[in-house]
Length: 627
Image (cartoon, rainbow, N blue to C red; front, side, top):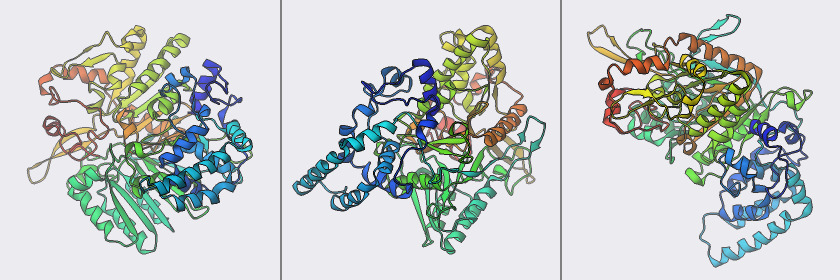
């Protein structure tokens, strides 16, 4: 979102307080305006608890909207670009509410009293209606106080990420590490072999001293479950969330669930989300100063995603027995660990679903030291869905990064169907073509999904697929086919399919039987020369907005270098372009088992062992598809 602001400032030159609220600060660099804000507290654990307790209450949200109505309005041009509803932001977001709390610690005792006196789970009886009215008037008087309101308005910017500052303004995170289970290839020719992601999860859990919370879509790794049990026996308090669909349909996952549930220090949750409970994230020790840490992954806790041997473990040694292409990041960070615990508490302990999540906004954590200018510091931005950012992560975070790109765009994507991201890429292409005559873009997409009729990759190379016949043909009506011929030729050469080692392969076992081994490109990555999405569970799709997801955008030199090396390693292995793949399929369209079936770009298609879409034609086509 910070990136959008710079773009919006340059394009629109809008710095107004009315009639659309305070939508931008006077600085061209939003980090500067968001740093050194006068605050009364850095007790994020307590402030996050207030946010959970209060922003899930309609009367509280109604009061905040009443008081700060003007500050929720957004210029119509920006609203249209960011897909914000006409009239502005629908409610005061969590990241704005935290700012309000930071500046007014003296009202915290009143909040404690309100939470006790007015429980949120009672019917609006006459008794509580009167009490609520009394509290409404008290808070209204406080919030309308010019000293409170003017200070908040001065520093509030709903379009800007909220920095989770440390008390000494030092680094909010350190010891950032990046690992991929594919070969990293650096510009200087150096290579790093694939990492064992399962072992990284185990190592992370071993270091926990007091607390662990994690949430994953799928979980069948007994080694990791054993490590959680060992941690519980040394007194670590543990909470684990797993998507309910996998708990109820996969015996291996149910066995893990039952194993964890037997231990007194472990609470395990079968998460019944509206969409998919699709996160792959873990935090530890958020209440121990200096000990907080976070692990964020693109892969689940499964043999297929994180086990180095892939599906062939214990059965066969084969070049095709590899895990899905995934990566993870780890960092030491008290504030980020506190934020992740806050988000997962809403999902696990409170059981929120869909629109019950408050509008959460976007968070920023700064790296480096306090002697470096804020504008020059490394940082990352983090958001969570449902109700992530200002309600639309695809437009407001991914699209903003694309519009504010620096250098070549590169992407590794499992499922890519977002219309908002499609539009942002096309806008970036046309803008760059006007300046240079080229569009610097390269990609590797997972083959079974890159050639689906909803795929943005298919759009970009100017083709469409007839779902009834399975034939691919040039789509002359699509906007991408309006680009110059030289650019279209370049995209058809640089939009690649997965390396041949990925996909479904049949191998012979020693007893004469056959085994199907499947692997896929499961990363959710886009990067330019300065920024990139890593450790993200969020596929670039519309349906991801309704899932429980995490998205992290880094502007950090170390991780960008490693991410570029991961991309180059996979890109070099990719011998076929997407165009070559679909033209080969055109020779035998009747062999495509997806022809004539229902179609979905839902995140989770292909995520489970037997897929998540109950369509026999797809289940038969892609057997044992991995997480």
